[in-house]
Length: 114
Length: 113
Image (cartoon, rainbow over all chains, first blue to last red; front, side, top):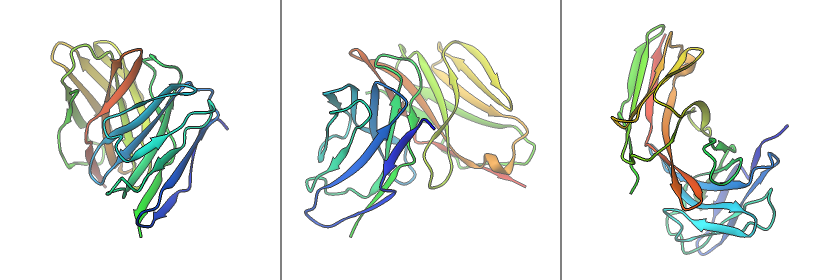
């Protein structure tokens, strides 16, 4: 089945630790996105990538890093510089950059601080 | 700063009634508008896309777009308890050669049996 796979579903971070959230898609989509959702709020864009080896900061990129070495994969690293990482993280993709087509989401990763 | 505002809710309607969800946006050049449904603890699921002024119907859902008033709405007819969820309005806008979505904070809908 085509879709977006995020792992793990739940993740716990210790103080001073970097953690990496995985996002893989087999939809052959060019564009991929990372969002953060806090309770009772909408989605805020962290980073996005329109093509391989290129990515752009979103509205809340501080404390996060990404890579896009393969079209299918867009991992997000939450660094120790992100002081309030507890949130629901959502990965999305859309068919190609500049498209008016909608974004489709993975099932998300819940990150908490130990 | 692109802004998307939704009626804050929560909104409660009886089963079988029409639920009306509203959204306004700040960017006059936005071209694409989406409604997502998000069940508690789950990821958003696309339920409607609308690109031109007027109404678009899909089953029990109708999206309405008025670009002059910068307003988009979602009507759910014959509401069912399974429609109870948070509904997110999203507006697409150009950022260089790319397009981004700005989301509203969502309206929580409860359909009472």
